[in-house]
Length: 213
Image (cartoon, rainbow, N blue to C red; front, side):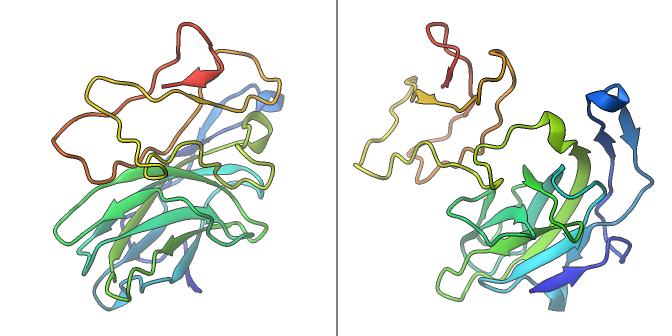
């Protein structure tokens, strides 16, 4: 496991935090602070876990923009709490020549850090990583998909060979834990082997507000 100092030379900037209801739900900006920046000889190795400090308290949710660049092979990566290992999920996917930033969220560990774990796809997917801390959401106002803070995979069309055809939806349930309907649910959507260029989005169904498309 490798650790990055929050104030080491890099390009990640902490933007701010959303404070919970007890503090009036206010947004507090952070002073500029680098988060993580791995380049040249610091490439993230296949299967490596790279941890870095973020502003906020343990149990709060860090919002981080991940940008894998200069990949030597195809792979993927996951942002997760420093308290746990990487689960079966991905926040970013990459291959040589791509620059695909994506926003990810993870609970802050007891050591004040979150981690990026790189996939191990045959040992040929070393990659540079830029991680920008955008802000922190108070844990008291955030409902995790699972109590341990790990993502919960709801759909994988590779299982059973069900391909989503053009202009069609895939509807799946989301967990609310008795929260109020209409709250925003965040999902990480990864497209695998598309047959043509296209877009992706989620929306609330008109017939059942407890599902997303």
